[in-house]
Image (tube, rainbow, N blue to C red):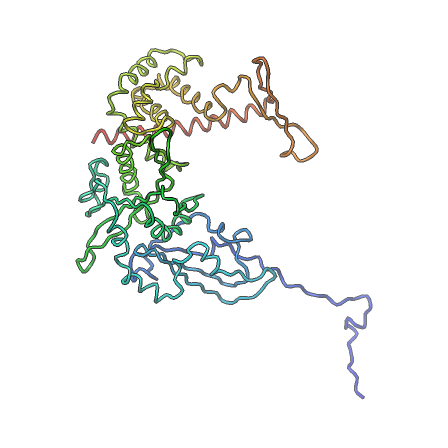
Length: 465
């Protein structure tokens, strides 16, 4: 009977050696940001075209579990096309191979449906057909909508200083309220999620929501009129006791291919016009991003420059500042806008107090020329306002404070809250903490000063035209 011979080097013949067991490497996955590309397209020919508009959305990882990583695929590539005609989307998902590497296999299609919902079309051919079958979708939406009396003819509006001259077409704003809001907004939700940081869909069942649509009428290649949605704004109306209404801008979005052409400004101007013509209490914006606040301030400062009821108060403040050699803290308040001006601006222009106070700073800056010898005093005023917004009107007065204390336990869970009594100072901060606070406040002041200078330059340039 034959036997198998082992060489002297065989591990079995040497009891000191042990057989090694190999473990496959756990799948590290791939981030959604690294494998997903999204394009905005306006025709079937744009699909797969290298010249298609590539969307730069916010962090895509947030839409996927496991810290935004996708598992189980090798060579994964996801290309998504979003139609600006019907707002449907199609996703092309390709990969070299798929296997469970210890973390399962991510259901990519399910994750994409959480973003695009019913707008996601399964078949590419069906998606391409929507460019013809739904070519008049936007027109059908606005056919029964209210047309507002704000129109851009040949790319120039009466309120936007002809910022849209490059667009040889008509742009109108339509208002939709009630049930139709839900039908349209459901198709716009994916773009809101992708492009508006920190956004959540509005409650379309609440009848107090209104949608303002910025629509462009253009001729296509067959000389047929084509309606395109350039952007939209979602506005909420709520009651203010006893018998008034306030308007709050909840979301505003200009479609990426049409951004930086003045359309966002025009849409804000239309909303201002609606607030004034319908005599609401005021118009506010919910947590505006810096870019939106910049445009908003430019518009409101221009309106206030020609608003006669505040000019005398403004000139008085500027005159006092030019005569000041130093500025004491006790005199800071006299450079704020008087209550009568705040109320006049709110009643007539529908600008709320907080917004007006920021505009007032810029109006003062413009009134000071600016001249370098006035800037030290002016910056002291800005610094005082920033400090008041961040740490309170009088951060050195009596009140509650929370301070960190050294501990051998979790530092984030260890603190002391106390309240000073009899008007005594409640400031118990180490020199290190105080210097950190002052440094952070100075950064905020510098940021505010830069914003003021930019807006002042923009407004001045417009008025020189």
